Length: 205
Length: 337
Image 1 (cartoon, rainbow over the protein chains, first blue to last red):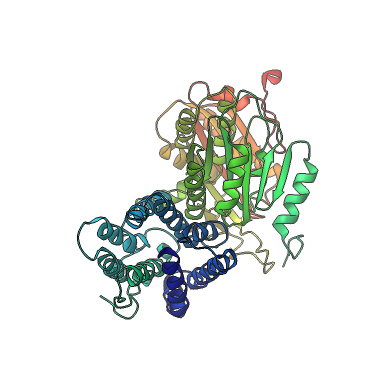
Image 2 (tube, chains in turn yellow, purple):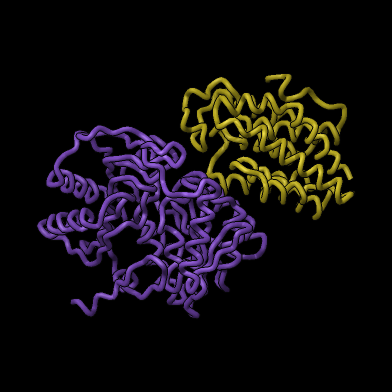
């Protein structure tokens, strides 16, 4: 299974990006996003080690992020992981596209936000669109689209969440949640369609 | 400095354990994750009613657990939303054959955490709908996407929904009714002193003796405006004017809630109600139902909120239907009419 390797790679990528995610969240939120994402993923890694899981591991990631991770972004990531798990279990061939689409729909319902509102949807929606589009290189296209979407949030004004309270002051800095999503799709492309594309952090688009 | 009488470690947990013990015949507490359940419900009720939100607004919501009102609640820390896992467990415990209805005050954190729980419940095959309470006039603005805050009308919505649910009504009908109750309600609050911060023991914001915070919320945030404090004779008609202007058109039969924000005495609240009632009488409006007391406070803020609900056909009988809860007063007024 490639799924667990996607998660393993994501654990490492977020550990490396922790300082940058924290810096982004301090500009627009309460600064705990990097901590929450890293701690949640470390816990997922420990549970995968403990159970010796050979599957994709996303059901573990979904449960940990829904049940144990604080803040509002963490559980929203949990919804996405759970939908990916369900879709991969249903059909590994279409699981990433289907699960990402279902996760996007669930997060839209729960967050009552739309693309353009400076949320993680701004990375997730374009990634989902690329995964759904037929043709070569869907994973690499999705990674690039998620990174571009995350960087585009730097020019958006928040309507929801804590960033909405700082208004225009958040301008110029990408949304940390969107960057966290871009990292996930970067890891997915690196595993499914190597070599890894440029990191979303290193290459603003 | 006036630090509250709370234990240093886990004050909310201590209060919840005390509450559950004091009302052991009516409610039951589970601590992992924290939620409370009513021990009894009307056998005709098929839809479980679940609410919750930050602590510091007691008796909301746990005080309204019991036959005739709520089936389960998820309390968060002070002024902080409950975790979705609390809402999930409360909802599982409360769900009836017709599903579960969430009563949510309009705050981003509460909306998201109840929403995540709703997604999880649907995957478990439990039907869920949500009623959003958004009655606060002071946050009625086209400028923001967040909308009006949920405040005093929450107790009105929870009481009316409880009685309607006890008639065996279905989930969709109850969700529509709840939305109608909220839509027919508007509230406005003023404060003369902020609540004491549990951390510092000092007021959360400073107000001069001649000042009034006009349009204050229930989480200790400042109002949009600070005004020179007018005498009650000017203040109350101004609040009533604004509420009546904001209420959507409907019957002239009103429910009036005068709600204390924590440190305001019954002497004050009943005097306020007397003035408001006389004002509404003079305007030719009919006060059909009333509730006076501290039901949705902001810790120990000194102030009050005024809620008006237009009562449509049949709502009065739901308001008066018996409710056996720790905090909702008996509304059976037949004896005194």
